[in-house]
Image 1 (tube, rainbow, N blue to C red):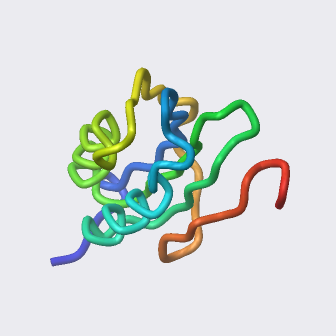
Image 2: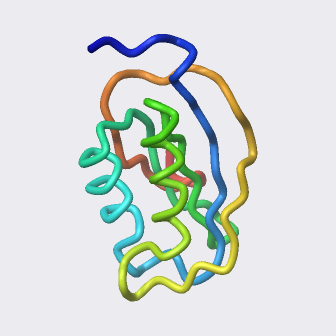
Length: 101
């Protein structure tokens, strides 16, 4: 079965709360790979986490639902879709923080 462009979704999200220093980026990397998503995740200087998820629309929706809880030590207060669309390189990567590119 092949994936058509109509079923692919790409979103950039901002995840706020207690999300740094609690394994959130590594959890996101593991979870996104399990769901077969492409994209990136990184810490932001304001204490939030920014992630880009790209793949089948249902898998992206599943990832967004999972981001609300995150890993066990995280305390997510808000997940905001900042941007829809765009393209990403294949695979999923953990990037450095936005102030340490």
